[in-house]
Image (cartoon, rainbow, N blue to C red; front, side):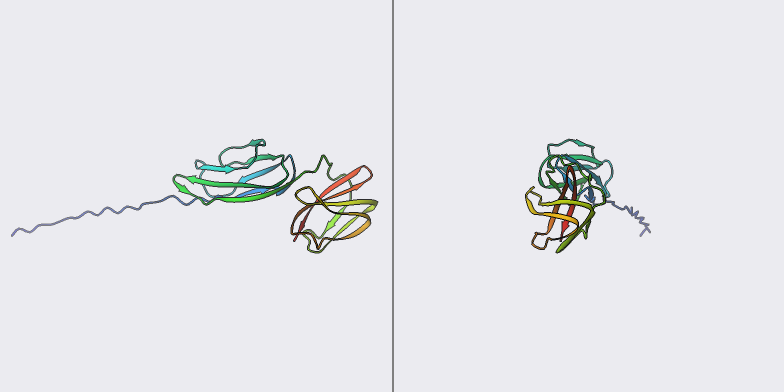
Length: 187
């Protein structure tokens, strides 16, 4: 019997699958007056050649493409969702959704009244508003634009907000022909 040598070549190969992309992003600011813009920035790990499926839920002006960044204008009142899913070379991310809040500020000029402090913010039961020697009217609006509290203030004032629901509010302060809008977060 002949001796045979059997040689076996084993080819080792590693199959590399792409990394699952993430669909994380930031939105700034989170609270706007209607017809203001937000800045949306992708912060995930997908490659620039991936397909980015943005859902801005608006007919407003949008600038940006692909992974962004984007400037998006919202001329609506209410809660707005922005969503993103990513397909990176056949690897799919989960969908990430973030919420922004838009209220109608009706042409109010912001920050005309100087030296106003609102604290604490976020607040649970009370807010303190401190300002220089003026009589000010304070109106607190919910996200639908409804006035939920109205008070006349002198120099320093405490407002009980314990009965308000958790959420975002606009505190509109007026004195003579000056006005200021401040954002309030009720916890």
